[in-house]
Every structure is written in C-alpha cells, then in structure tokens.
Picture: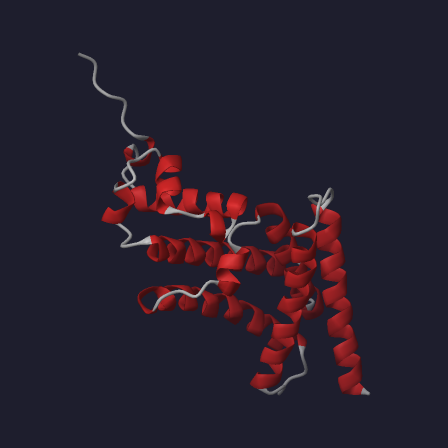
Length: 206
C-alpha cells in the first residue's frame, strides 16, 4: 500500500507561516469580506481544523496576516528611502511612490490594516507593527522638515503624506479596470508627495 502524499502545509514544518502567506494571498484576491479560515486551510493544503492548532480563531489569523503585511510594507518603504539617496526630500517622496506601488501590485489586506476592528487579544499585535511602520515615516519626515519641528507637527505631516499616497492608490485599485502601468502611477504618487513637501517647506520659510 502506497504512503499518502504529505500535505503541502506540513511539508516544510512551518504551518503558521504557510497559513499567513496563503491568508495574505487570499486577502489580495477577496479582501476581508471573502476571508475565512477554511479557505486559507484549503489553499495551504491542510484540513479545516489544522489552522486552529496555531490560531485561536479567524481574528487571530487575520491579525497575523495584518502584522505580516505591515512588516512587509515597512521594509518596502525603508528600502525605497535608502535607494533614493541622501536628499531628505527625495527619501520621503520615494516612500509615497513605494506605498502606491505596493498597494497596486499586491492589493493585499489594505482594508484589513485600516478598517478592521481587531479584538483585544490581537489588537496589540497589529498596533506594534503599525508603530514600526509609522516610526520609519516619522524619522524620514523629521529629517526632511526644519530642525526643531514639533513632533506633533511631524506626525500631522506624515498623516497627510500617507493619506495622499493611500487615497491615490485606492482610487486606482477600486476602479473598473486594473492599472496598466503601476510604475507610472507610483512615479505620480512620488511627485505629488515631493510637491507637497517642497510646498510645505516654502510656506514655512515664507
């Protein structure tokens, strides 16, 4: 009698990571509304009960997916800033382009990050990753703005910066057609961020 083929999720011994990866992929396709533990399990090639050995419920798996998406996005923004060179304005502008590129290219869990109400047991997992995401942008904005800018003003600037990049990308994501040229849209987002920052600096100097 032949041995059964091992399930894909167990093959490499890291089922939680597989479930998170497949959960992120499912979110990119269906959003939060179409997300279920059973669907993720099917994608991972395991039984519908297997995920509950690692995640207590749907929200626990969603929180792990949100944390993974935020960690990935934070890394993307940090690398974009590094690759932009030493100019603080260009470094911050590059994050807007990278943000738009990520949303348009992945479409993974953006509604989850911003609108899902996680229960108390899992809220801190997501908030910790959110803080790291904001820390990167706050540091870049503080470098680009005049020395001594109050931290609250830096935070307000970052809020507008992220809102503009997010809104621009989401308008395209939610359109009737997928964007044909992601790089062109990312360049426009970066240009808008650059204009916002240089205009803000000019007003402060004037």
